[in-house]
Image (cartoon, rainbow, N blue to C red; front, side):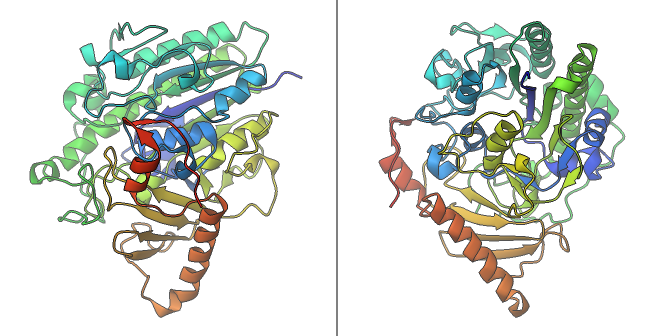
Length: 465
């Protein structure tokens, strides 16, 4: 029997709460909402390390950040892993990757230099040995900053809006791959709705859709910066004044993303691939827009960690909604299980495809440093279930406990409530047990700089005692 195809569509910085099916009345996401009705909705999916590069490293290895070594952005991924692409190749799949990669940088701020934006053929593509139209990192989606590479450092500039061009490439690949006898796996990593949220960075027709939409500050907005925030998460006064206009562009970008998702779904249907193809729609992390006194991501609040995750396939039956906490580290083993492919022994996540009733409701989440530099002070660990989030910072030992169901904005820290002491003890025990299982010693960020990298390129894997 032919193994199922896989189409994995990944947005960048799209939070769960900003899609229509999650209840956002401002969102214009009819195709994603329709996909939800046909899919298994992992409604408590979380980004285990809500930053671009650490997330992608975990996605492609099934390992936590402390095992991948991708502890911040703008360092280069080591290749000493049995990655998702390798398993797909071994299983006879044609593999394709389109869009943002973000695992090959080595110089913060020099993203447009081909030595950082071009990912060469070979081990640095982590097993994606087929069609590879990608770039390492950028978020300007028009003009000379919107491009991709194939198999050379030559930049191929996008004729039009980059997400539209990427979707065109994906559709062409799906059509081509559908004619071959072997199954295929295509990953589409779209850069939207990541900032910059300027009107020049989104098609005018999508921005026009939201010209009369009223956006307001989050219900958990704080006018002062979170003292635990890194430079990427702090807001300047002039940025606070722009928050609602940023949201307008963000929602316009998401509406365009929805259109492109629909184009892919239409192509799959037209080619008669519905029965043979697993389709995943998700995002790498979310965005805060001033919630809790922060912007961006890299924090345990739901605006940052909770992401959409839809799986459509004929083999996926009831329940159509799974409310167990589903972590990034679980994605690779779950999809490999669905595809009938072997899960590497070193994978640290859980295979949800087995249908076992005793899957644990809980996800270990982490931050191992600032977004894109080596510095101590932002490290945290957290454990999230559908009901609670427990978190602790290493720098000052400050702890948090939120009732995710009773207090969805996570405004009330229950850590000092005597009635919650047993809950705290249980979540801490489970968190530290999972950390111990995978050798996470809750190190400072400087530990990794000293032990894991050389010239901002990861060279070897440290042994955690």
